[in-house]
Amino acid sequence: MRELQAAGTTIILATHDMAEANEMADRLAILLHGKIAATGTPLELTAAGAGFTKVSVLTKGSSLSDPELNFPAVSKRISKDEYAIFYSTDIGPTVSAIIAHVEAQKDTLVDLRVERPSLEDRFLEITTTGGVQ
Image (cartoon, rainbow, N blue to C red; front, side, top):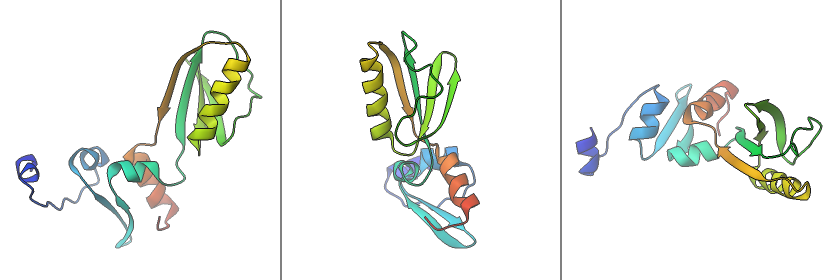
């Protein structure tokens, strides 16, 4: 299939394996009850929707240790392995506010990771909500 794809052949592949779909597909269509519920590139599909983007932050100090800290668009917060982990629906304001807070506390940012939902997460979101996206 990869040789055919490289040669420009259009391939229609039906799969429930989202890792395979993410790796092989230039464009995807997610079907729900026989109708197209979402289409786009894997990148477009994982960027869309109500899914939460995970923002993991490690600082030298304890500027993010207060569980009462609130940042824009954050719906959930956990701590794991010295990281403060925030689940955001709009990462721009979230990341900006976290960085501003760390700087205002004169703390040092060691690591900041932003992880969008996987294609599997997005597939489950689309198919369990039952709505066309």
